[in-house]
Length: 330
View (cartoon, rainbow, N blue to C red):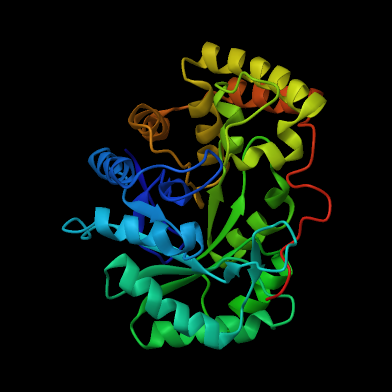
């Protein structure tokens, strides 16, 4: 495992972290508590030191499972969680609504500390910006938690460059978490350059394209109960067939480079910027080891050029989310 600093002024973390949504719920259904604990312990044994969860994962169960798994092994771990999404009881179909009110942030931090079994959260992130609460107010509340010693650093998720600038004017922002992969590169035109200007890390969630970039997804229709990908355009019909053909071409590039398709995708992100830290999520020990080994991959300029040529010739098909799928205000 290789390591890099989280942002310009943050702690040193494993260059590949672990996205922990799957410890409670996620794109692939649910897992048991024992499997979740084994996954965290195996990640630690591989040298992974950066763990990212949220208070909305499994209604708090994700934090509880991560906290339990880290019991006795908290030292040396950089523990990140998120706030700002709450259950949706309005029937919008998203399952979550946004709540960035300062009072909600402060109360949620106390609950997260209890569930995570820790006295300080290393990185506290705003899960989504609340459109009805100025981001400066929300970040101001988060800064209060830093001053109180309950949080070490502040992060944001899925914000634009303008929102990042507004937030950074209130308090130091250590990181921005956004979807970033070979199939989702929108951050490269705005957010990543702003992160580089501010010295903030770019935490890349879904760096394997929600599993599609691993090359393991073979079916063109039908997912198990609870698999959220069944609702995403890129995983349906002709979109999926096109994307699987694109993945097959990328697999050829990976084979010539002597790496797995997943390692190709992760290493590509690591080569984009020293500020990028991917957080693939998995509870499979083989996949965890494969992902961790991606930090040792060294690409030639020719391999990077081939990747860009493949993506330019056949861009990903389908949007990230269904039309109108936006998180409403609580």
